[in-house]
Figure (cartoon, helix red, strand yellow):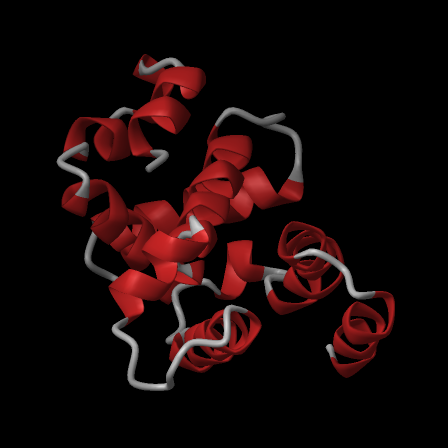
Length: 155
């Protein structure tokens, strides 16, 4: 990040190009594997992201977060992580039934439904769909168009 910042100052890059550099260089590193670990607390990433936005836009540290996101036109990393988790879930449930990941998902899902064991990831996926008032998608994922699910959940 510091090398990007020094390039910005040296080349006097406009804000949109600097943000684009962040999106293409730093953000993929921050969100790497978030499809799997996304159920964990991501507050440290959010703080880093908001600090970057505040510093970039030369805002006071006490500027409310909603204003930072609104002025920058950015969404919280929390939302990006959840969307990545949903896309990964869709790939699993609609994917090849011969793949190992499909079998592990079915096993974890059965254990979850039988109240034998709840994987944190499975539990978070159910919570996401319940929060979005899409319990039917969670219960019967193959009865829904995946593009419709992505469109409805995307904020």
